[in-house]
Amino acid sequence: MSGDGPSGLSTTARCNSLAPVYTRLTMQSFNQVMAGRLLAAVCALTFAFAPEAPAAIEAAKALDPVPLEAAEPLDPVLLEPAGRAAEPARQDAIEPAAEAGQRDPADSLEPTPIDTGEAVKPTLVKVYAIANPPDLLSPWQALGTEKYVGSGVIIDGQRVLTNAHLVANQVSIEVKRQGMTRRYEARVAHIGHQCDLALLEVDEPGFFENVEPVELGTLPKLQDTADVYGFPIGGESISVTSGIVSRMEIGTYTHSYSDLLIVQIDAALNPGNSGGPVVAGGKIVGIAVQTMEGAENVGYMIPAPIVNHFLEDIEDGSFDGFPSLGVGWQTVESRALRDALGLRSDETGGLVNRVNAGSSVDGIVKPGDVLLAIDGNEVAEDLTIGLGEHGRITASYAVQRKHVGEEIEITIARGNRRIIQSVILKNEPTLVAGPHHDRKPTYLILGGLVFQPLSWDYLDFLYDWRYDLAYYAYVEYFRTPERRQVILLSKVLAASLNRGYHNWDNAIVKTVQGETPRDMTHLASIIDSARGDRFEIVTESDKRLVLDLAEARAQSAAILERYGVSRDRSADLSAGSSSLNAGR
Picture 1 (cartoon, helix red, strand yellow):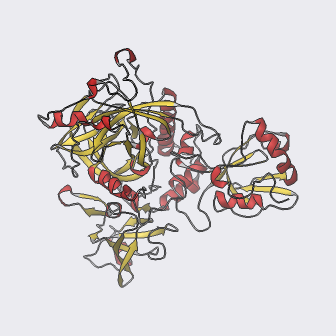
Picture 2: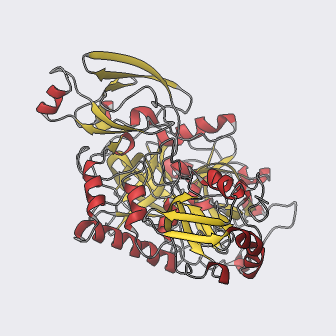
Picture 3: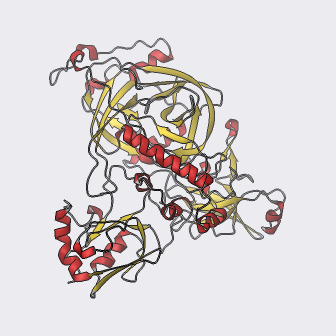
């Protein structure tokens, strides 16, 4: 895919026609697998073949600039949630638990490394997690517990490195070293959902006894041979598969819908391999993370530069994530376009079309500028930069390999001027938020009307594909000062008060009480301060919803009780007064 085509891409997951589906390697339930596959199929087929797609969306897609974070030459698209399956039966009868304060004699491992494989095996960890994820369609409650099984590896500092998607929304984590019989309780020390990595800690020191961590390596070369270690489905013992490093690019991470450096390897990866180390040359060069559904032996790993970035990031105690410039741009391969922009024959770069509000270059770069270089790396006409012996890669990598808060220089062509400008890097959100992990969803209820912000995982929860919602996820994804979130009237809790609106759901809110809400916090302020006789909403399709404001406030508590909802809003909106008695 060229960078200036009608892509409709966002800085997160995207839906292009006839695109591959990536699957995380954790075990999940059959129903969620099928729901994810259905959504992926509908997305691909609809965008590829549906002639009834609204003209406005198609036109917008054709004009939409490619974001800097999504200018990769290939087409990863809609990503399916990880498949879950029941955890393999535990053989408790042959795994006697040691008494409290004692270690099983079998836990005293004294590895004598003979080769790379023998050095790696003692560091391998099987991870058992129980999660209780939120129910985004009823955001005041959880879906219920689910079991996950995956892999991990012991690294320096007596820590276990694994995937974030394996331990997201966890309520319990246990780990067991290769060759041991006992499980140990573990906890999440640090987690980076954007790059799908997590560090676990185990308080009992015996867990790390007599183990020598394998050193972290660097980015492997194409055609390098690598071994993948883990505990995939089908057995309790360790599995080792080998493959060739076949591709490295900026690709989409299924867990976060973020576009980061990812490496493809043609090794057999299966559910349960998630979090296992990929080893080449005696060093860990990556962590297994996902596969491409429908393709044989096409797996992906989080490469060592991303792992090292994560480990450096959390040294201050928090995960800041990967920065971006926050622009949409296009290639300047056309000679006529280059001449119109005043570029010299020896100059290449990317034409900026959009700038995200609050981004790293907001107020510095303008639409119409040409980005010639980023951090000293010349941007080619296909929006790539050189990566030494590894070839070329999407220019966003020049930014992503830096840390949030660091300063870089960019070179801009603005007419006849050439400007070198310093930029402080940020990791700013897009209009449609990323998935909800380890936090409760945001919601607000008044008179049975449920309001929520549009997010990527909310889209995944929907069984009916909605073009109007997808438009903001895949096309109009840039934030502005006037709009920082897309707010939905997600459902109506039916009551006599709101009769006539019981079938309303997933309506995009345009105005509330005559005001356009910037985000959920602003919406709460509008509702809490509402005055007058009526409460009125206008949707983006210009439909009107009107309630008696006093009755809505008076009956809200009874409606919440009837539907088993304890609060009229999520905790993050609770700093202000409740809408149940506000405005009186």
